[in-house]
Amino acid sequence: MHEYSVVSSLIDLCEEHAGKNNATRIEKVIVGIGERSGMDKSLFISAFETFREESPVCKNAILDIIEEKIELKCKDCNYTFMPENMDYGICPKCQGKNLEIIKGREMHLLSLEMMGE
Ligand SMILES: [Zn+2]
Image (cartoon, rainbow, N blue to C red; front, side, top):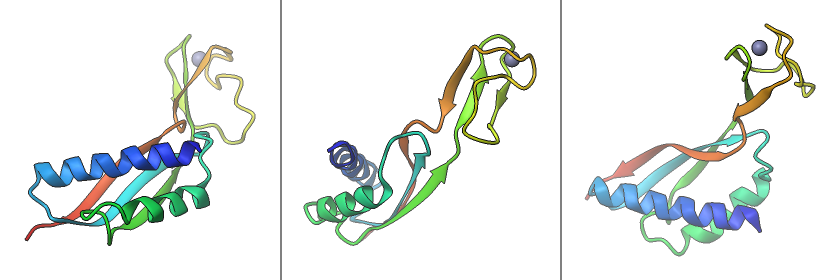
């Protein structure tokens, strides 16, 4: 499952950050999940709950998910915008159809709350 591999690398990333900051515990993990990431939020949460058990650093971490809206960029005029609805085929500025999704397609770590010894 996609969510499991994403969460697995998220935990690795958390441990890496904790190591760099000499933290022994992570209290809270805040991630952003794009609305077009194809990620299932409830699966993501249950995957997180499974994986954190394996990690002494993340064991008691709370997961906070922020859903991120999609953002588009027009390749013709470089205009970036957030589409009002799911029908986002046309640039509102130049009516161009050469659009690229620049945000809202992935999961990324926004912030961590850590505790030292
Ligand atoms: Zn445009």
